[in-house]
Amino acid sequence: MTRSSQMIESLPNPERFREARSSQPGYTRTLIDVAGGTRMTREKNSQNDNGSRGDDSHIWGTVGVVVGGVLAFKGLSAMGVRENEDLTLVEITTAVALLFGPVYVLTTAGKHLRKDVEVGKSTNATYWTTMAGLSVSALTLAGVTSIDDLIGLIK
Image 1 (cartoon, helix red, strand yellow):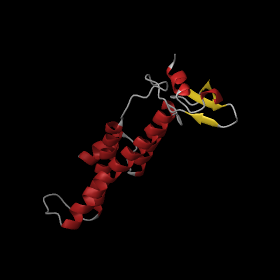
Image 2: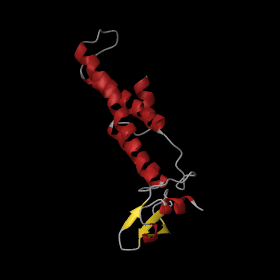
Image 3: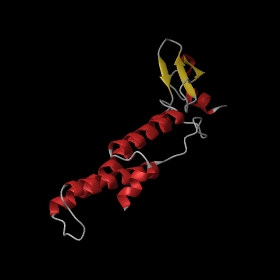
């Protein structure tokens, strides 16, 4: 007896239900009420059908630190801060916000998109394409269009 058969037998009126395959990736069973209604079990496959590999937030955090570092450097430079000067509380707060803001935004976007992949609303290809697009856009908005821009900021 399969697991879904056992589940059907445990229902109050088991004769009213039959098993059908789910069309949703990542889930395998749908119980159809013969009288017309539908019930769906959310039984996750032990092997993930959509190739999900888990948490990738460290990748987006790294991109966020690069974007945030560029923003913090440019922001402090625009505020007139020079080397070997003491920073005021406002300058420190601004630098920290600019440094960690992009980290938070990119990792949060990655987590939400990863959840969509795990539930089956999206594919891994869509996840990586979207996150790569967000990362490139964030770098471009920060003024980094090539590796030479980063090297110029470091010097």
